[in-house]
Image 1: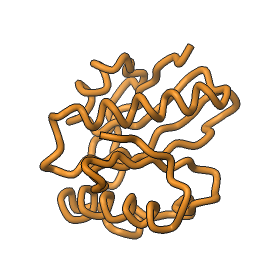
Image 2 (image 1 turned 60 degrees about the vertical axis):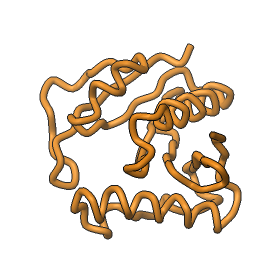
Image 3 (image 1 turned 90 degrees about the vertical axis):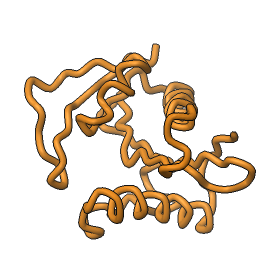
Image 4 (image 1 turned 45 degrees about the vertical axis):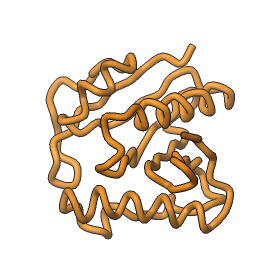
Length: 146
C-alpha cells in the first residue's frame, strides 16, 4: 500500500469517486453536501489517496482550520479494504504532512460509528454531545501532532 499526495486531476477524480461511493451511495449523503469548493488540486485542501496494487482504495483531505491546527475531512475507505489498516495508513500520512507543514494539532469530525477507530489512533473526543452533519451523528475529536 502506498499513500500519495494528490497532484493532478486524475488523482483528484479518484478521490471524488471513492467519496461518492462511500458517502453518497453507501451512506445516503446528498452529493451537493459531499462535494464542495475545496475539491480542487491547487486549492486550500491537501488531498490524499491510498493505492493498493495501483488501485485507489481510500481518500482523505486536510486544510488549515485555524493557525496551527489542521482539519482532517472526507476520510473514506472502500468497503473491501476496511479493517486492513488502510485508514490508519492514510491518517498517519496526513498527520505527517500536516506536522511537516508546521501544524501542531489535528481536529476532525468523526461519524460516531468511527469514533473508536480514531481513539485507537490517539484522538480524543472534545465535543460535549454528538451533532448531526449530513444527517449522520458526529463528534469533534482532536490530537496533538507534537
